[in-house]
Length: 114
Length: 114
Image 1 (cartoon, rainbow over the protein chains, first blue to last red):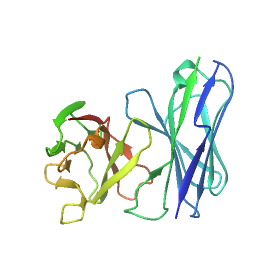
Image 2: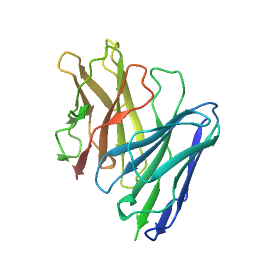
Image 3: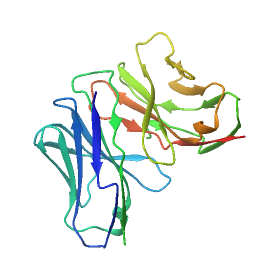
Image 4: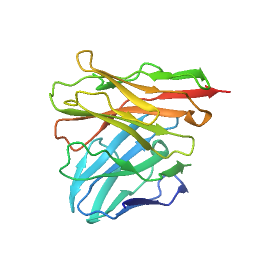
């Protein structure tokens, strides 16, 4: 079976500090991978998605970036965090080339920027 | 224009009653998929049910069913015999055509009262 991991689970960072959130998927190959952000009490905003190694699509211009150095690894980064970067970050995967398959989410990382 | 509209920000329902959560969508594609997710207070996103645009029958998964009205572009979630554990945030989502990304609505917070 497939599992998706995210770490860390929670993170408190000062404004201006760097960020690295990691997501890994097990039990599948060549998945589509996604990063979402959810502000407190709000819906999900798609930040980045990737259909293969080194292939990143950005949905929202911001001071975040994403990379996919390995097939099942997706990293969300920032060089300098802003207060507005606080939120709940969710990674998700989906089976590629499947019309019906849904996205499955990781447990999330709760980021607080102070 | 919003692709997914959930008009009920919050709902209060008595335990054991049936619940209908509204969702309307906007797309010009003939092929698309509709999803519902549940997000309890822990933050995890749990996939509940999927409906394809070409599916003739409404999707059902245990106590969950999707009332799909294609002409009205409506995909309401029905939860039968609600339980206290159903209290959570519920998101409707859509994937258009063979797009790789899923767009989410803003969610409905459901409270089940004992």
